Length: 389
Image (cartoon, rainbow, N blue to C red; front, top):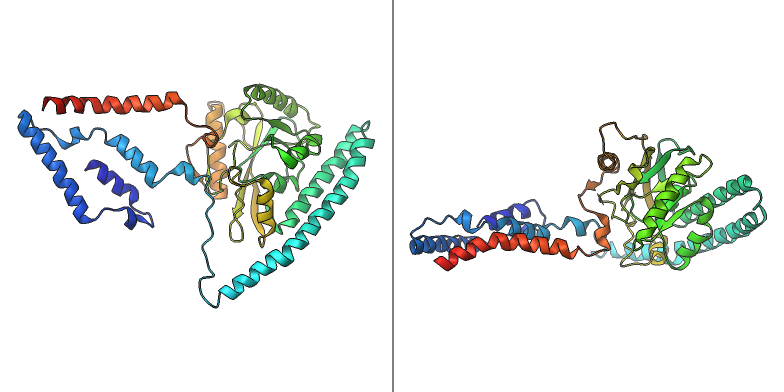
């Protein structure tokens, strides 16, 4: 009965609660069954067996019910489909007209714009990168400008409407920028304003080619989640990068994975134990025209870009927030949580206590065995009582 009450509490406040709540007759059956069990046990052993003692395993059942009713981890990586508005006769023609305009007019224009931008970019980038090898300062300045240009072309191909709030980032030693992460387009949106060097997962295909050629010129650092050795190499490169005042500002997405912009998962502490200033950036997308969340397990980045280019517009706000430093009595983990609080509050997103890497890895067998052991330990005393009865 206690488990049933816990379940009802979890359901309360949900829009679909009426689908999950048991009927009054079912509640009566649960109550009668529990009372009958307690009475039988009391008569057989001449004991007053309390229902609370029989249901000591309720926390585990409550936890299981919580996972079924309100799975906060899965919700972080769900793309919520827009509510349909073409459900009647006078709205359907307008919706059909919108589809024709987006796919037959806007999309071809955007493809032409993107292709022209790439042709111009490559026509300038290749000579600059090849001819000016001996003039590092001039070459790096021109490459930064060209990368900002091609990122602006990408944003224009989505009809991006981006509002930047706060002072523009500048190049300074001993500082890193951290931002919440929704899609790879986060980097493009930030890059069109400032040429950041980013820490990013290695990708296959044409994205990987861009990483190892064009973005390499910005001082970007690549890693592979499956390689343990990469962590040590990346840590050394980060320390070298932030010490050099001539390098581009370093951008880190401490969540380590793309989250759907309604939630923020735990920040990795690596960016917060470097002994440098941390500059938070909050990014919030308006889903009125398109959901900018990229679910890399279900969709390639090419298809994600196609989805954006076939929408009306990508609407986004970016806030450059006050730089933060580690407080005297603060640990790196607490520092990371404080910065995450700032970003979540500014962007209007919810915090959850989940590690985003669980999206890529199954829980450890040791963790599973530990939970099984706790459950069996709570169940064994009751099995012994049943045997005595």
